[in-house]
Length: 130
Image (cartoon, rainbow, N blue to C red; front, side):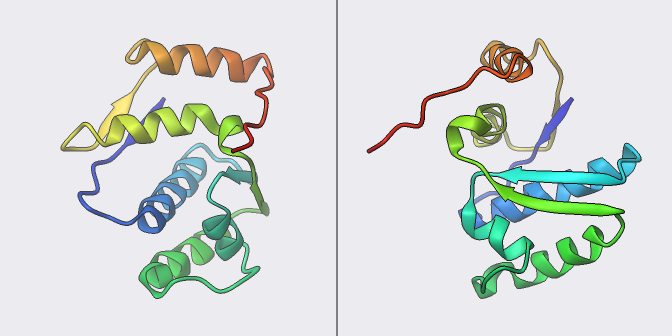
């Protein structure tokens, strides 16, 4: 399952931090103790890992992320390219079209089903160069 939430006119940094925050809480609910977080927003991943400074608008969200992170035995934050994060990107795009929090299950969005299947078989996507 996955969850998407309408955040109104939130900035990308705020939306990415909220997704990270919600993902950490979901991992805790699933009793996951060792976690590797992969994300395609390098600024948020590096800020969560305390590797460099961040915009003031996400300061309080990051403080909560850092506090929540201490509940894991091990946790690491890794940047991945957007092409390797297509299921999450699809869920985020779906969130733009709704007005309330929605839980998604396989079968809800055909495109997401395909992306999850490709992700499960470790299908590699070629990095697009602009």
